[in-house]
Every structure is written in C-alpha cells, then in structure tokens.
Length: 112
Image 1 (tube, helix red, strand yellow):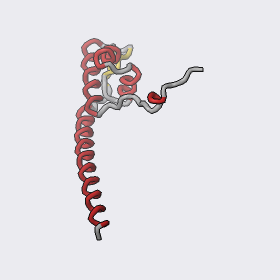
Image 2: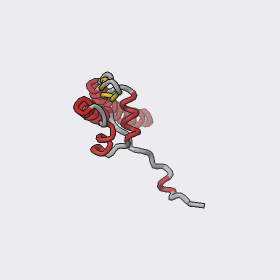
Image 3: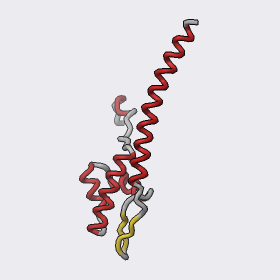
Image 4: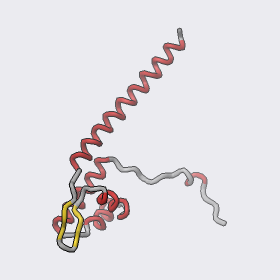
C-alpha cells in the first residue's frame, strides 16, 4: 500500500487565463494553416501544456483543424477570449475593492 503525501492531496492543475488560451490557440491556428496539421503537438512542446488540454480548447472552437480534404478553420475566438480576459480582470479588481469597502462598512456598523 502506497501512502500519499498529505501536501499533495490538495493540489490542482494549472488554470489558464482566457488570454493564455487565446495565445496558444492563435499559435496552433497559424501552425495548422502553414503546415496543414500538427499544431496541437507542436504547441504542447512549445508552451509545455498537455496535448489533451490544447485539443479540448480546439474542440471548443478556436483553431485550425486538419482534415483529409485539407484544413478547415474553426471559428477563431481569440479576440473574444481576450475581451473576456480583460473583463474578468476588471471584475476581479472591482470585487476586491468591494470586499474592502464591505469590511470597512461592517467595522463602522459594529461601532454603532
């Protein structure tokens, strides 16, 4: 029976931002357009992300996909992903500010 290190039990995989995904998908798309296929495998080596992860992003739409009849280009949603990433960053910043304001508010109410 193998015992697991308790520190390892709570680890999760890396989470990628929408901007990071967009960069990888753009690279895969450009590679596939030039070479016909192989973008996922080469992106995996270049960005050190598993092929399965990149392939899932491609399946969700966003990169050129090789086929027997040539290359068909799936809808590239890189710009939309970038806009989403920017909005998420702004939302996160504002939520952080709001949490600080709520904390100050609660402290002042306790003084009443």
